[in-house]
Length: 581
Image 1: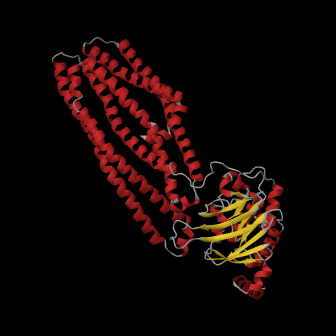
Image 2: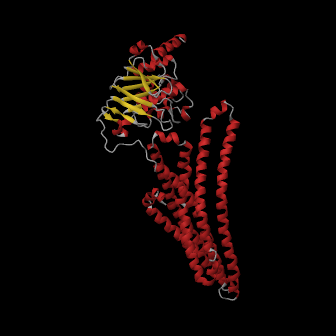
Image 3: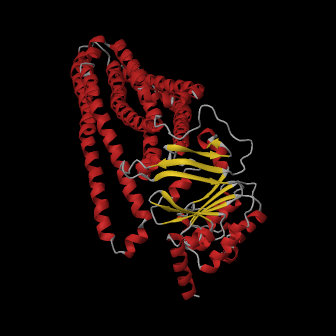
């Protein structure tokens, strides 16, 4: 299995623990093999009437001692082997999460969150079970089964051969069912991913469901998806439900034959009653390896299917990555030049490109305002700067260097980005502002929220900066969440700042204060997208976009003279603002 290479390093790293764990497991198996010998001595002494209280106490003491050592060494193998399986789970989850973070934004447009969650939880859990208990069951099946057969053969070869008649059937069934299990396990895991995504979406949109009174409809939809998932599991159960009973049936058939033939040999004194009792005990020990063979097949097939699903993600290479030869400027100052830029999303038809031949230059320290109708390509254009997407034609120069030749880490460290849709993590306001940067002081936080017109709001909260905002910032209003994301961008010391509609959800007075703050960022190159033209009025340059093209460009005064989209919209908004004054 090629996918096994994913977890091979963890086996190598923990090889001493694995060897120690397997050694403890083998010792436990050996101690279990010694118990039937004690039973043989007891039965032979009882049938020969050669016993006394001292002998019985000695045999009982043997069993107690064996039980104590079995408990000690069983703890040892569980600590080592099961502990290692959890290390594998941790490492594989870290690898998966780290890789997913490197994938392009386009990948997440095509892959559901529920699918990724299923990989990071359920699939990895099955890999852990396969590497932990799967290893234990396989060792028991091989070592305990082999040694039990050897002890049985030591007692009586003929009886042992008779007891092993069902074994070829066991091997055949294991091979036959394992192929079917693998296919059905993959279907079940895919169904779990779909179910996870459907439930996640409904929980995330519970308020919308309630306000539109759609509880019954959504309940029926989730019920249908759940039934589909159950149907997939039932198809799997038809396979596993046949496999395990077959293993038990073969074992019991073997036991029936041993009782019949071994009983006759005991009557004819071919073997002693103690040997017969010990033989049956050893055959009982074989029952677990035969069951373990079925269980380990189950675990390995489920783990293998999950590992294959994880491997598909890990084999997905990001298209946006560092160039072979990078040439980053020593210190990015913020000069940006768009040279004949064209771009379209994969979901768009070929005749509907997102951007067409954009040529534009923003000097370091300048402010660019971008306006236009919805869907004109404004957000798409600014997303190309930090390479959330890559241009398809033309190039973007940062301080004279193609942004594709700048290391991604350096490029994105030079850009503070405020997205159009504010997103907050379910931690505190402080967590959302600092984003894990412990170097940000309290004074820096206060300065950032003051500039974002958020300081009074923070002071009014019960725990200030340490107030929990809930999932996606549920305790905050839309305008407050927008200002938190603005403060997060302001506190980020980057020479380039991109603000996508920063005042769309705030009142006019607050918006004016935010605009004043943006104007004071003289040392930064600022790009502002806004539908409220008051936010871009004082920009050094303003461009108007329409259908992915630049339709107008110039200063506020120049565009007002043109009497086109910008001038008409600006006058209309001035009338609206004065009517609400």
